Picture 1 (cartoon, rainbow, N blue to C red):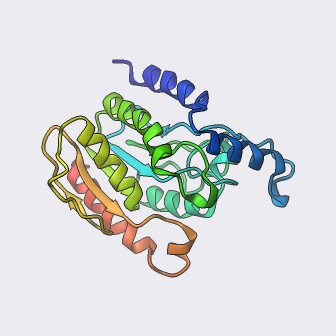
Picture 2 (picture 1 turned 30 degrees about the vertical axis):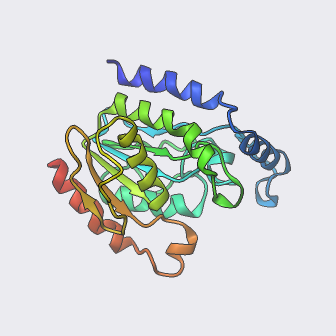
Picture 3 (picture 1 turned 135 degrees about the vertical axis):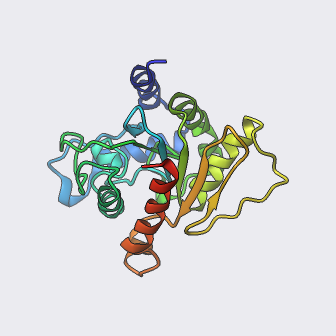
Amino acid sequence: MNRQAALKRLARKVVACRLCPRLVEYRERVAREKRRAYLDWEYWGKPVPGFGDPDAKLLIVGLAPAAHGGNRTGRVFTGDRSGDFLFAALYEAGFASQPTSVSREDGLQLIDSYITATARCAPPDNKPLPSEILNCRGYMEREIRILEPKAVLALGRIAWDAYLEVLKQRALITSRTPYRFGHGAEIQLPPPAPRLFGVYHPSQQNTQTGKVTPAMYAEVLRRIRKFLGD
């Protein structure tokens, strides 16, 4: 399989998606009204596809694009404070070519990693509905089939649960087995499922209160590196 070509085809499907009327209305309204600091930007205002190395061993699963981050720039975790924290950590761990992510044209490349999201459109209050997450599930499942990662890093409980739901739909796990989320959680799932790691989401609420620190992310990323054999 040509992974790069398959991911590009999938990205086109994601960008064209209009399955969730609430999210379509919100993302497009935000793109029209804009934030004062970004009045000179042409907002993306569409679903945001995954991004990264087509030969990635690590799949990173986030929540959803930020209204004035990914929904503005068109790339996951790009142009917001969560992305500032995440990419600094990925750079220090050798998974990114630079510690910042400000636009699709900034030269950033992911190394042996790929970032996707549970929901592809910016949701009001950063809270996608269960039905909206369900509408996006097929995109994540397709990415997993294309990439065949060895490890998955879930950024927050919602991403953790969404990934496990994909495995349930593929009959790789059952609902009877609890896989508890927590920062630093590490689960060896039944093969051929990748090993699952969890961290708290790099939201401003978490990073500015000290619930998440760079050292906490660095420790988990070191374990992932060790598991991948790098």
